[in-house]
Amino acid sequence: MGGAFSFLKVRGQVRLSIGAFVEDKIIACKDCGANFVFSVRDQQFYAEKGFENEPQRCRDCRNARKTQRAGPGVREMFEAVCAQCGVTTTVPFKPRGDRPVYCRTCFSASMTAVRA
Ligand SMILES: [Zn+2]
Ligand SMILES: [Zn+2]
Image 1: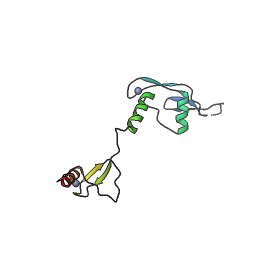
Image 2 (image 1 turned 180 degrees about the vertical axis):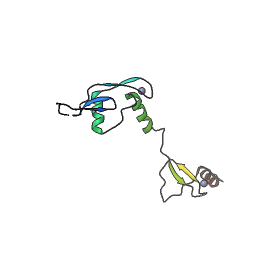
Image 3 (image 1 turned 120 degrees about the horizontal axis):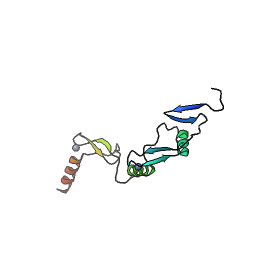
Image 4 (image 1 turned 120 degrees about the vertical axis):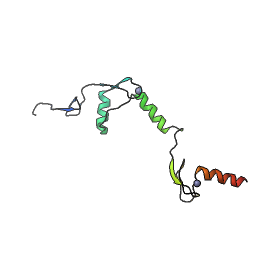
């Protein structure tokens, strides 16, 4: 210790203890295998946010995953107990206490019963 800068070695990466990152990193995307740049600016951004892991995916794949997760095709499912037969089922809405939830079998059975 005692120089103008003290260096901190973090996982093979040298950075100044004042938080300045010295160089861009090239990382291979986990999804598409393409190399992408984890730039000094991004590294600083990550450090500021307190992220400990480096990005695993290129920007394209990250965006694709984000849209996938929020996309209309994927609906969150909630667990519920069928009011008719007591089986545990999943429903695409949050069950509220004021309405009974039926499993698929009982639901279609009740529909048939109404129609008959
Ligand atoms: Zn990718
Ligand atoms: Zn049921």
